[in-house]
Length: 141
Image 1 (cartoon, rainbow, N blue to C red):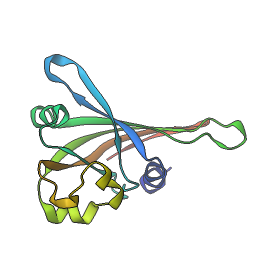
Image 2 (cartoon, one colour; image 1 turned 30 degrees about the vertical axis):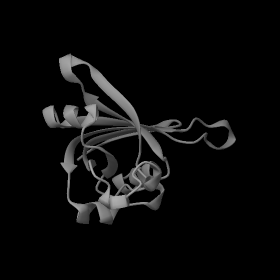
Image 3 (tube, one colour; image 1 turned 180 degrees about the vertical axis):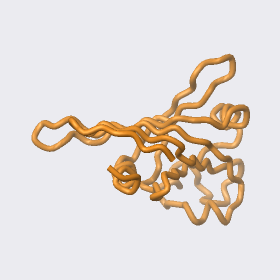
Image 4 (cartoon, rainbow, N blue to C red; image 1 turned 90 degrees about the vertical axis):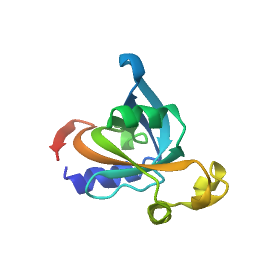
C-alpha cells in the first residue's frame, strides 16, 4: 500500500486512540475524531482544549502515536489496523481552524472556531505500519 492508500483508509475511520508521553514516564491515550480529514502526506488534525492534559503532554514531548481500527472486513476478513507515529504541533491560529473545521465539532465547541480555549493538534506522520488481513507493511516518511 502507498501512503495515499493508507491515508484514504484512515480518513474512513472516524476515531483513533491518540497516545502521548505522559508526565512521570507513563502513556496517555484518549479517543479522538479526525473528522475524516487525513491528507496524503499523512497529516491528521484534531481539536481539543488548550488546558487539557493531552496538550500539556504534547508541550513537554511532541512525539505521539495514533492507533486506528477499521470496520469489519468483507466476508469475515479482519478489519484494517493502522499504527502511526508522528510529531504533534499545537496550533492556535483561527485561520488554520477554519481550514480544518467540521460543523459536527460544534457538539463540543459550541462557538465554532471562535470557541475560547480551543487548540488544534496537527500530527505529522513519521512512520506508518498497517495490517490488512494477510497484507502488512510499513511506510517510513
